[in-house]
Image (cartoon, rainbow, N blue to C red; front, side):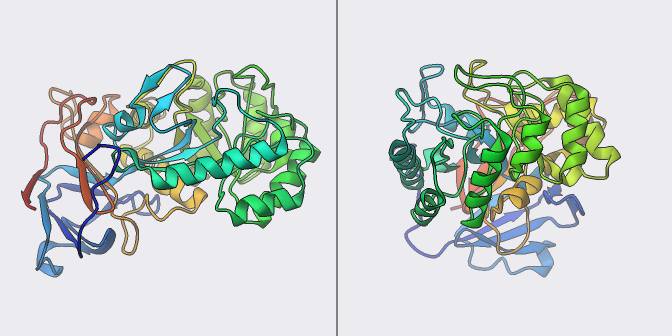
Length: 399
């Protein structure tokens, strides 16, 4: 079996996860759940609670968490895929599987902008978006859900173009500003068309990242009114603090913080959002692959950085990488509650971390160790090859 093809169950499946030491919900309103057992059937969560209170009979797979923490699979809100697991930016293969070993089970494309010879005529833009959507719908590298097919808008596009793409299955807009549309009024008109047909949108924020992109400042961001303020901390170059505050205060859209951005600006945005009582707007991405490479642990690094330097409880910081993004992007993963996708990452404190447990480990700035990932109720990886080794790891006791 190629690792590109996720294992699919031949018949009905029932996953039971028992002996959970800490259950992180992904939901800001209650980030820690009082439960030690999860049941999932046919890839969806069906029960969460204490072992004595839930039906664990007839399990096809039993995972003993061995007292480790279980969280929703992490979501990377900002990636730039091209073809399968190859990225021309670093001429690297296998990067998506490496992210899975960093706990990421879902990725969202902000545009397939590194495609060699990327078409910029309208027919080509639409064709490439539909192609990418289809390709990653068919391909699940290591089981990871890659939501791709994110067109970069160009001058001359009409409402009919957005309707056509949406009808074909395209759900996302790539970063506004990476194409020829860099002005607020045109962007706002096209973003509204995209939204009318159910497409979720993001915008480039800050200085140029690739040749052909340009400065997108607060005025353009606010006028465009995309669903997500893409890398508000710059990708790589951030706007001045005053403009970041202006964006935070001027809209209620998602505030995306990325690994490949300005860390000081990320912390400034976090503080501003906290002052406003808007931590629910904070979501995380890596903006990889990019000039600074591929960061398999990028989302975990952002969680740890924001918790330790931003003085946010670790269980809250994990919500930035899970439930917040799921709600902003209308995904059925990211929160541990019934009827959502059974996507999980098992973690424990890193061996020899100064923290006494995983939450303290993260709050002190260390990365946790990943011991297992599960997507759609199927075990995809066991002990991570990329994180520091976890003090405790789960085990499959029946399969």
